[in-house]
Image 1 (cartoon, rainbow, N blue to C red):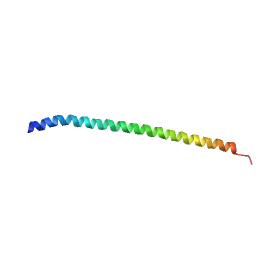
Image 2: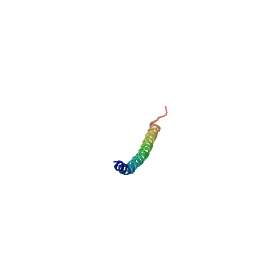
Image 3: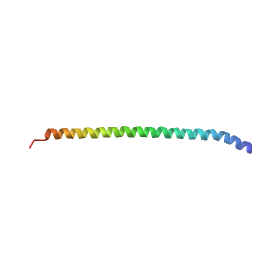
Image 4: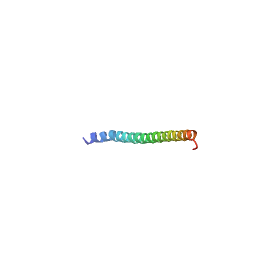
Length: 67
């Protein structure tokens, strides 16, 4: 029985290590992708906000009349 347990652990050990390594790699890649998407989205939103602000400022300058 001891030989069977030893063989079982010789098979399971590399599988556990490979599985854990894959989970770590996938988690790191996923967090990197999420960070990249978040930064891109934030940059795009800031650019849109700036464009809207400048458009409003230009409109105000065009419609403002001296009293």
